[in-house]
Each structure stands twice: as C-alpha cells, then as structure tokens.
Length: 302
Image (cartoon, rainbow, N blue to C red; front, side, top):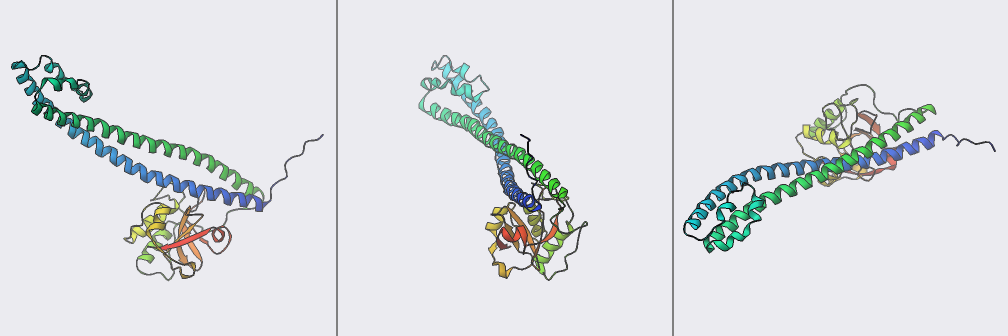
C-alpha cells in the first residue's frame, strides 16, 4: 500500500497555530520577567546576608577574644582544664560542637557564651537561606530560558511555513523610529513619544532597552520617561493601574491581552504601539480585529 503524505495545512491553520504559539510565548515571557524580578530580590537579600555575615564574623572575633580571656581566667582559677581548646578555633561550627564547655563556666559566663553562639548560628543560617533562595530562582530562570528557546524554534518553523504558503508578516509599522502625532497630552504624550522612538527595535524577552524590548519592558520605560513608575511585569502593571473600559480608552492607556500575557500602549484610533514577540520589532497595530481583538483582556491608566 502506498504511503500517503499528511495533507498540507492551509494558511489559516498555520496562522491559527502561530497565534497560539504567540499566546504561549506571551505567558512564558511574563513568567520569565516575574522570575527576573524575584532574582533581583534574592540577589539583594543574598548580598545583604553576605554583608551581615561579614559584620557578624567581626563580632565573632570580638566574642572569641572575650571568651579567651574568660577561659584563661577560668583555667587560672582551676574552673576548667579544656576551655583553651574550645576558644582556639576560627570556625563557629567548631564552637557549637563543643557546647559542653558551658558546664565548666559560671552562669554569667554561660550567658555571654549563649550570645556568642547565637551570633555564630545566625551567621550560618542567614547565609545558607539566602544562598538556597538565590540558587532556586536561578535554576527556575535557566529552565524557563530553555523552554523559551524551544518555543522560539517552533515559532520560526511556523513562520517559514506561513511564508511558503504565501503569508507574510501580520502587519504593523515599517522603518526605524517614529513620531507620535495623535491627540495625547502631558505625561501620556511623553510616554507615547518614547514608545514611537523605539519603532523598529527588535523584540527580545526580558529586555527593557535601550535597543531591544519585550512588551512590559517597553511600556515600563515609556511611562518612566514621563516620570511615572508602573513596575516591570505585565501582571504588576495591570494591578498598579486604574481600570478603564474599552469604550473609554485614551492614548497612553495600557492595553492587556491573552490573560495578562501581553501589554501595549494605546495610541488612539483603535491601535497600539507594542513590542510583539520573537522575530518581530516594535510596531503599531490594530486592536480592533484579528488576534488582539479576540484576546483583549482589559486596560489600565497609569
């Protein structure tokens, strides 16, 4: 029996799959950006813990010096025969492992040792916790990057297939740079002028300029240029802005799509300027038809 090749997909089928992949990529990029924000926090906590550990190491040395003096006095008075070995270590854990020394010292000295050991324990615990948290976020970020690379390849495959069927770009602005000529004023106009100046710059997930962008990176920096902070991720931008009905959209409003997987800046006339997805550049597109009409989620005003 002769083998039959699978039927060639239609342009509509390929475009539908490409739109679905774009939606998956939007959500994955949002996850990546959230992890990047968590990574910044974890890195800061680790740096602070390392700094605190260094300070505590100084306290450790000071405490050890005091205990050495107590130990010398205890030994001189016949209180203990083995305390000197206890204070000879530079390692806090070695101190912890020899806690039996308490039995050789007075109550007052034990209280000072308790404080000393608490300092040593804090040093170990805070460093370990901060390092574990940092490594965990790094691991998740690396894992997500690998998934994004695989998705990028599938997107490229579908785009090539679409071109072979006579389909091309989904449309948008051409050229590099642009000027906003719409009705916005005040901070909204400044934000839109900034976004238009990036037209033609390539999309790259996790990027927030100056020469490549992802969707929320562009909107964040556009509004930052106008002196307004709107955070970094799509979800947090939605949460940080005032809800606006679609019928009441004004230029400069943030428009969200695909379950908060994507965001752009409304420019008026049913269009937005945005950083779309891998393989494309910052562009102006309609949100009144096609993918963006069907996947509209909501809007927010900074």
